[in-house]
Length: 475
Ligand SMILES: [Zn+2]
Image 1: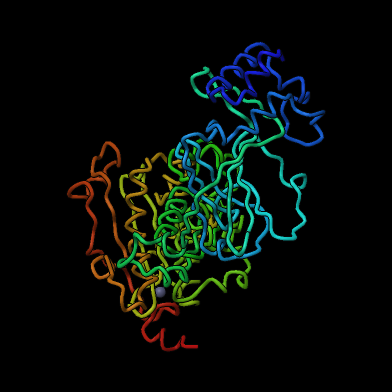
Image 2: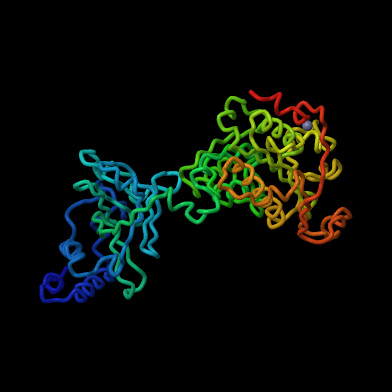
């Protein structure tokens, strides 16, 4: 440090720009940070040896006074849950995301929605920075309640030189610089589903439950759409793990490879609604202890059969009948040239799955993973069945319109979308091209045809759906 430079830095007559120029020159000659902080930048107190260079100390002290800071020109805004603002005295980790490119911070009230970004020091919490999670190279948030009001500041562990000096130089030394943050409260319950208002009643939807049998292409898509619709409770059943070949038609991606699909889909649901309740079973539904399912079944529950074979769909339909839940099955045919939807709910005079489609049920393979309802021969060759997401999703989304109608059937303010039009058993055509679907594709008059006139068998003596059954079953 030359006298000339010291004079430069400390002269009150010099402008901030000249200070910066001096610092740039220091850094270009080898810098003053590394020799002080021998650990190369880990922001731990133990790594700090000796006092900072005078120029560094002056530079840090001048932050905010000269107008130069890593945040210069930034107007940081933090969206904070109203509940957190009102929770005077809260102390603990903050979860959320920090977006440098838009100078915005989103604080969540659940770790399910985002990773740790900082800490709120409660009064008397006794927390010291040493006890905090290690700070990374990036921004972090700190705050505390003062006189009943939460204040937050954004910390940056590295001082960055302005853009014009070339690539930003980070000196991740001990002293973070801080920038106050404007707080913008938000009410998650009111905001999250505000775009559904008038169409789906949020409060009622949060009580609804979806039991997903299978979390593959159909199940994962159903989970995302129902979460967006405001369904607040989920039960996920699937034995599979997510593999590379699943990704092209699954809602999860590379960061979920090797995970159980139920776990990956659960996290996706919580990314949409952090307050959702999601229960997972790495199992076929037939093996889940019934007492663990019962709390989630009832008139506001829809069981979605997607991705298993007809035997599991039949089993699930009977479970729905016993518990007065609704049931919707969605499946695709060969190459997803078309698909089929079946639904059941009490009080509509509908056939059970067994009566309607019993001739197609294969009891010998109750746990196979044939995701597609093909013929026996086809299933043998269907270790995997090609089918593009756009086709599978088209069938599934119609099944979901049915599901929304069924779980809202007791809500007098809800206007049904399709239930008065679609029959209990519906075929959905993606393409009638025989080059894709084979000869059977020719049964459809045109692409995108959706049937509304198929009739299924009804057995008046069926113990599940026969005449008078519903009266007999009253409990
Ligand atoms: Zn029946």
